[in-house]
Image 1: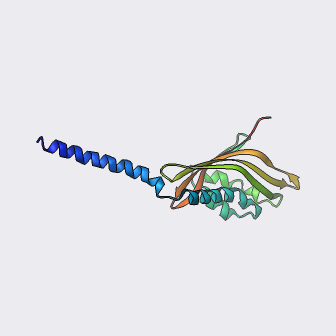
Image 2 (image 1 turned 180 degrees about the vertical axis):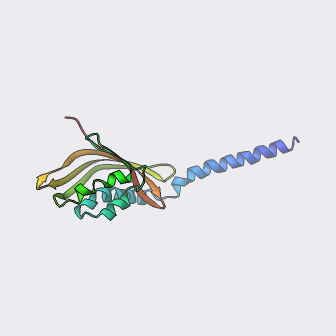
Length: 164
């Protein structure tokens, strides 16, 4: 019986070390630069789709489920994909015209597991409604992405304006 205790200890130690090393290896197996480029493309698609009114591009960039969350500067909170889709009436209206957008100071971070990322940046979203400016300028923009089935999608976004 005394001979079994050291053997059990060695087996348990080996298992523990194996689990810890697997966790640490998750991020080292991905190319961070490549992943950040893919993430940046997803972020750009989530705003750049509007120029051509390409809903397919938009919906490929965000989570199409009930967990999707978006917070706007005017205290509007969008919960879930179906609620998000209600804005189609505005975006697809011929009176809405996306002019251009610019993202500045984009900072992207990736989790140790390599399947979650978050970002921060400043957004200028220049648009018209019935020929009049309808812009979000100097907008703080943060968000969270999740890698699902090998593809980065946005699961949460938050927009805010600095108080003047």
